Length: 261
Image 1 (cartoon, one colour):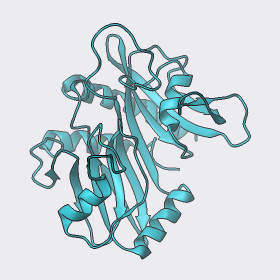
Image 2 (image 1 turned 90 degrees about the vertical axis):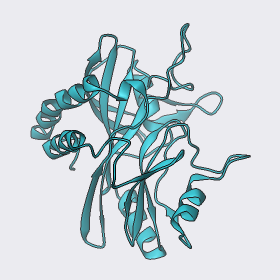
Image 3 (image 1 turned 180 degrees about the vertical axis):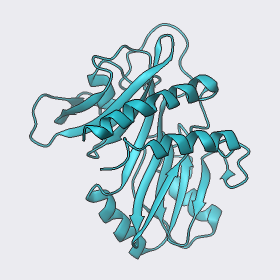
Image 4 (image 1 turned 90 degrees about the horizontal axis):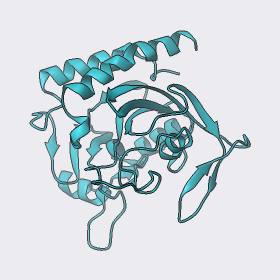
């Protein structure tokens, strides 16, 4: 498997940041209140969904898929995967049925790879490794991780200090289940900061967003490989030098895990 392990991703990310490609003034993307357009291809559309934007149509709002389709003047648009409302980041759509079938197959057989970034203000039980176990329904639409292994969720991660009291995580899904990263983070004692469902409510001000972002996406379509990364655009803790220094600090940990695979 590639990815949680590629030196390329992190060096490319930092070089793009320096060149200004990750800024809100990115001349190669179009931004509105719901998403940033990352790549417009004849076979697919890649956007970075903004946090607190619902993938589905709300009572009074247009759904994200329909909004993108209308904005780009497309007749059809086919979602390939989804992100939770609180989660920002890379989201892929096919523009025709053949591409939709091929991409769906890639995601189903796990030959498409994603890396997420998360921040937590809770100390983890472990700082890197594999989080695995069956996921079962809990209360009020939540999920929980169990110790059984009948059909386990698998999430591989590394982490590093961000600033005092906060930690940055890079996580790769080896399976794809509802709320998988959010549940995995909670299971190691470090729920995602700003996650209203899985983070315990405490006194003090509410974070300005849920700190989970789909950062990197790699897939193959019609025998051509594509790689994209896009840093978070929203959230005070996802901005500034401390965040990018922490991201760079994850690189050797990721490389060491590659050597052991």
